Image (cartoon, rainbow, N blue to C red; front, side, top):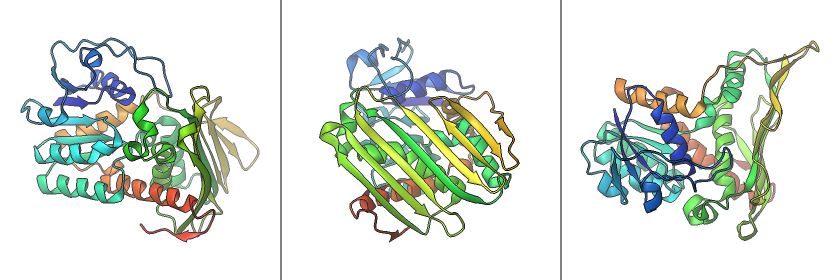
Length: 338
């Protein structure tokens, strides 16, 4: 299948690496409005994980500065949208109407209404749509998700998830709330989506936090209320620009044991109720390549992405937006309207 990658920033370059290693995929086109990158020089690309970008050979690819012009290319069968978030919905809908399958980087859209419109366009045009919620495919999260869903941990009594990083100085559009939705929305949608994946929809939420995007601060501590779980907390955001290191972590407490993970130094480990502990066995899988291969297989086989359904990604957008709104109500418990 011939692929067009739209956007050559941090996520676009990360996806390119995965596409290059994916059987049955052929890169056909790239889209970027930065001439240097469009020629294959991605050495100025930065992100919150990994090092700088590299040089790539785009000589055999079609190159576009306008995503809508690229959609007129009949050689492109599927598009991978890694553009600023405010462009996700309009470009995805145009791509679906043009008969292209669509993988769209998270957050799926800026709001629930846009996400729902994307889903409707996919149905109307009988194309595959999937949001790139990579945490579902990361071994450090997918193994624990399977343990929760299988009941291996017993009934879950508490869950704490945290994700933090510096305000992204490498991409100015991320600091523009109209383009990105803000730091809490852009970053913690990973953890909100994972909670929906393993626990389902909460009955209510509450949140406290602080936002000062001009100074690179945007954080929240949110609680998701489930009748059968003692408490689910999602916390984190941006902590000043440049220097603060990226980290992601969780603690899942079940009646049969607790699983702990911290990307800063603690591999996923099960602490059993009987006092024994053991590191979890993780498959040797690259999460980005896994999600891209899954999307590609769905396109080739004409099957809906059941493991990462767009309706679930739309729910993550809606719930993360609710959390940002709940923060303004300073801890008030409000019903979850999903």
